[in-house]
Image (cartoon, rainbow, N blue to C red):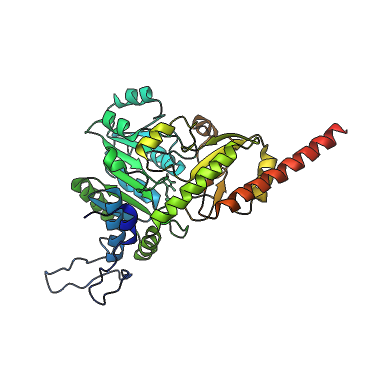
Length: 395
Ligand SMILES: *Cc1c(COP(=O)(O)O)cnc(C)c1O
């Protein structure tokens, strides 16, 4: 019988210890394993190639994403990099113009030295996407919801249009397998930065590649061992500990995010809120169709100038100014100078990232506390503003 995902996550590797009957799986730090005898290797020989602690996490993510196998890597970027090993020089990759900044940098740099060809396209513009497919890409990269504007693309539609000869890869980091299962929507590979929701506690940098077919899994696993980017046993252990609570964390994250999004949407100092759970989000219905929840990332713009923006962020006590996302604690970031600083100004503007944009990773604190903190910060900066206006008008 197959259980629900939240249950699968809780049970990852539980009761698998044959030696002592330990309830939770042990942490095997050993780099190497003895052979039973000459010519008789055991299941594991060397931890770069395979490690029991890492396999517990790989099996868990395979189950959660509904794949044939998973490779656990040392970071989300190494997961992206691992997938690029499937490309030959001259192969074309179609990448969203507003993809994760590190992914943008990696593909641009690879293309510059001839590792592949890359074409950035706004995948929300379906006609432009269909046009670029005529150039016969080897791989299509999909990221939805996008960072930081939470744009949504229709995974199934893009995969069907790409066809069987193209390797379809979805970066599922902004949600989790509990909210979105790209392999069931036509993708061949899913990648995660497990640094985010999968681990969920901002204490590991890690990644994963989950393959739909055994064949693709074997290719990816071969390359992972070849270039040596598999994750450490310790990181895998901590991440497995984190993923156990994925179900309950996601519930609370989403409840809070919806409330924060609505609060911001009703605030006169806020210009635009980008959150797929709001009905005015242009792809709200697509999100509803392919996701089981709307996630806990959102972004918004205000009318504040740069100085006021700085004061607003300083007044916030429960939203730490930091990059990254998906941890239990709420974070706020300024994409233009932080997460997306690797993009030049033209590329930023093309991706819709203005200096007024703030991105929030909504945590699992009590929602009243989060709303109270935002209220307080808005009140502080707007009272300073009106005092300033008074002083100006009085000469
Ligand atoms: C963070 C992130 C990555 C990169 O992962 P790291 O663990 O930081 O290397 C890739 N894609 C998305 C969407 C991310 O948010």
